Image 1 (cartoon, one colour):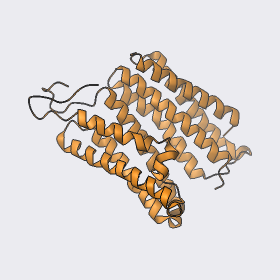
Image 2 (cartoon, each protein chain N blue to C red):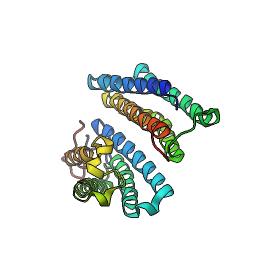
Image 3 (spheres, helix red, strand yellow):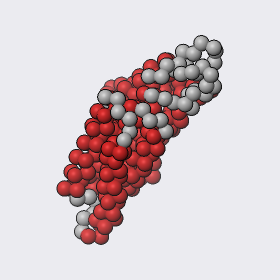
Image 4 (cartoon, rainbow over the protein chains, first blue to last red):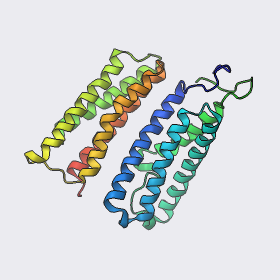
Length: 145
Length: 122
């Protein structure tokens, strides 16, 4: 990406990353809304987790779109690392303590209900952030994939 | 939901998805063909909305959670439009891939919607 562009738009393969995050955000938010409206009292912990996951996906999507600015770049890192941690921790817990996770969340069993996209996506996100730092110095590390 | 119509939609969405992803990966930018494919998916989804409204009134009620169903369907209807907008902001090969990703997501959502309508017990 040109170093003369102060806040480069998301380009190339990064835009695919954004749309997948947007679909996950849509899916997670939709699921969370239904769970909370319908049966929050059945599993308040699991469904609160669902809500947090949805917020994280929305935040990650937004932050990735704006990741050319260093503030949002940091937010994107935080959101994506949080997401990766979430899917790994909830994945492991849902295997080790299945009774705690009777009720499906986005991250249950490493996101099996979403074709493991929640597991793979943050890795792709981390790769993208690593290779697309915002241009803050004359030498730009940004690469348009 | 009506089984044969769901099958048609899933086949069309999956085909459009694979088609657009393949076109994108070989370097094609969005064209009438790829955007058109998504337009067809969208048109079918709008028809699905009508079918879903009429269904319960015509003796085809869902067994599953209606709220969950409609959240899926509304999301699905919004997705092609959103994806086309996002994809066409930059006309690259990846834009075509984005169209494909959206279509594939819709195929999956349709399958889930059918499960909610016919299998899930509310």
